Length: 236
Image 1 (cartoon, rainbow, N blue to C red):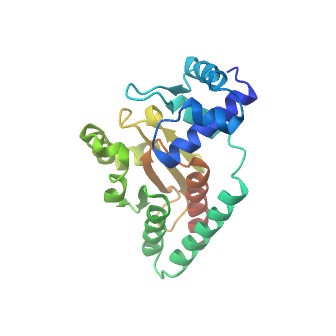
Image 2: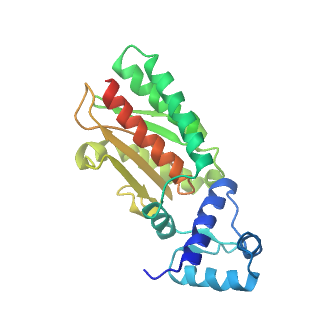
């Protein structure tokens, strides 16, 4: 895919600003940030839109990332910035404290999931033996994306099918990221599933992760999920 450094920078900014604000990002905002004219930014946005990386909601003059835009962003993440890295380090410490305070393996896994919920605002999940542990459903549905009952129903349907899918598909990568329509189940639910595989006393293929809107701070969330899986494997 042909994309210039400035187009990549604009896309990155749109993804990150939209993750923070949940509001479409306009050309005036981008123009101030990149010290160019709004017309220049609109031209660059038009190119990104043509490539299918951003789109314009019909109710707004701003742009939001598409699933393809998020995928491009995730594939080209070069590491979190210093401030983000500090926040990640604080969060991983909180995970460690929560998990290390538990004496049983199942409680440690639940503790890690509950921490991910608190740290990300997403729904947390993990497999414990043959059961799927879910936490934070109410937190997930407070996200602005889920004022639409259609989306809530789509997520509920996905959750109904998540446990059998994990058991049958058994994703093999240490970290698995399914964005929007990439989700093998619930393709129309417009959510991202980020899961880490780890070995536990219950199974060589245990999973821990989060499910939330495609509007994510992927740099932070993916590192936290990956760390949670690695930490549980070492501790358990």
